[in-house]
Length: 112
Image (cartoon, rainbow, N blue to C red):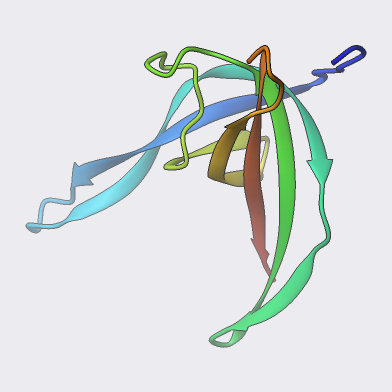
């Protein structure tokens, strides 16, 4: 894969459940580190969620590979943050036979 430009700075985040003081939990997101990536958008679509219109755009986000047990390896239960933009990770696959890169299949959901 010659010419790969990992030119977008993303923060990898992981969900954490914290007691809410009333016997339940709230979900917070903790930063796991910074990853440089190439972000390629797919074709978007709009759907109605209750009274809100939600637009969902799929993205393929290419990052450097990391061993399976490494905390820097993205997982489907995590997300990327780029400023106010959030990309939920749906699946992660090896991009090339040499396992130098990973493709993270993500979705960005924006309500409006």
